[in-house]
Length: 244
Image (cartoon, rainbow, N blue to C red; front, side):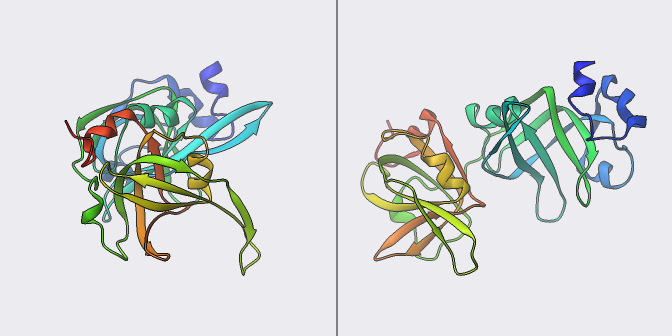
């Protein structure tokens, strides 16, 4: 019953009984071709197109985490909502953009506009192939690069600054110094990326996915609200100045 209660309000009552069924192995096109239905439990294999930073909130006195993972590519993709343990798991493994993964025990549900997948308490991931994307040598970076992945070591983390932009939106940013082991660069972490980096520490090795390079009195890495920041000591081996 606990498994059922966890999805109260997420799927229709008529589909509740489906969540104890054996998962169906599907492809993304099967979902949009009507071969599976809302409430089905599925296993799926595909490439990771992108991962977003987690969003934290409180519900019933408990802190909850949820983030979005997009599986597929620019032509066909599906949103996967990762809750709590599943959200943390993609960082601890870590799963990276471009990996091919197997995701098991996902719930198919109706999102705001289309069908989407949602993790369950027993959702698990397996990396079937590992991405070779990411820049660990700052000399390869160019001004105005966009949607790139950068490996770095954190040298210094500044204090968060809060302000209101010209549209009246509340914004926040943390500026840091990062290194590839040979040279240092300035980096700015905005909004949800700001929330993530302030929980990191100098000396941590990180990967910043979907970031850009901007001119701010010199080259600066920018991690936006749509980037993803993950800390993992394994990234040390992907940095030019730290390779064995």
